Image 1 (cartoon, protein in one colour):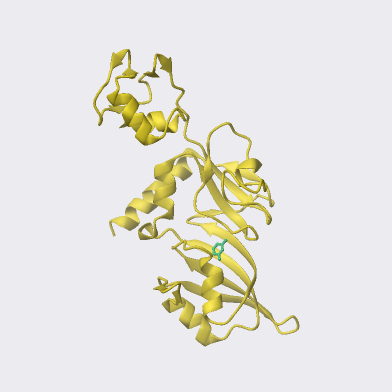
Image 2 (cartoon, helix red, strand yellow):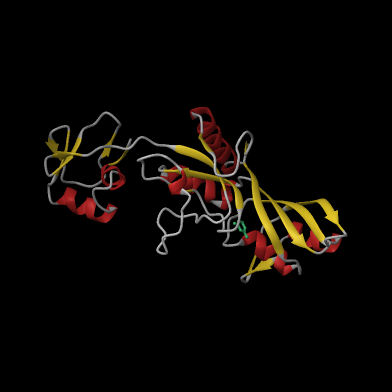
Length: 242
Ligand code: URA
């Protein structure tokens, strides 16, 4: 069951505030009966009309995209660049769960389920996000420990992270580092490396929770199964109560 104003807003009829006004003005009916107070909840089988016109309720959709480089993680870009939503064939009003930078590749979830999106992005739910960073220079143990302990970016200390050196290449003077975090501050990984003196040359997100990019090529996507969606909800709830 969901709040009536939320259902109206999610159907794209009005903003949540405007939907509240519509209710208070007596312009909304549920199963043919006028509802004039806020706080009423409706289920999937209830018929909601606004000014006599039935609203169409959107099914919740969940996608896992292998984001390519050069695509923006929003639903609309003012500069008309290609967005991650453009890559997915659907009429649902989906949006990305969190963000990957324009030049970052890898696993990105998209949905029209606000609760799901909030749950996955909230750091207290501690959903692991695993990134592979190619950095300039050969990373040393001191920097790895600092990243693991938490470093200061934009005046705030990052939470503990897991860091593994996957490969170092003395010839090109680069290192490949795996870093696992559960926060999602703006440009977090790049800023974390920057704070210990390394520039990120390439960044890819390989995993979110138990989800990986298995069987997908860059630019491809798939729907999450209902089982996977439930498992993610369970994972977040479990972490919250631990
Ligand atoms: N951290 C970054 O710096 N960039 C991303 O795209 C994701 C995490």
